[in-house]
Length: 143
Image (tube, helix red, strand yellow):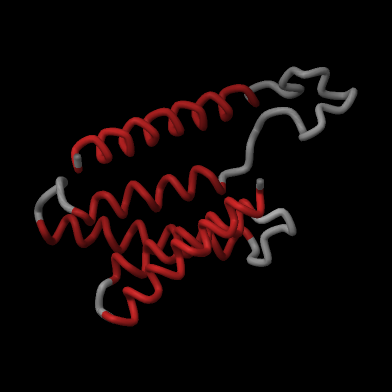
């Protein structure tokens, strides 16, 4: 199943790269292509060939670019804000989990094994719910 998801994300990235070739000044297409490639890398069953700090830098720059664009436009309802939220969503997905180690070894016992670890996981969960709500709202708004 991971291969199917990876290939779908690569296909989305390819569509946006082709659209970027047709309109080379459309930074929105570049942001969508970057997000498609990022998702493909995160879902790839063979691992991500790009180091995490590179992805963090790329999505931070993308988010800041579109935030500045939204400020110049003077509106928080345009496509620039959507790209900011998309970049932040990618950063949330790249953030390391602060929960128990994968595999839940004997030392974790299924519980957070250091004070405060559950807080990070709670914030990540809250951010995920808010971002999912935003994207559902945008999808319904388009209909």
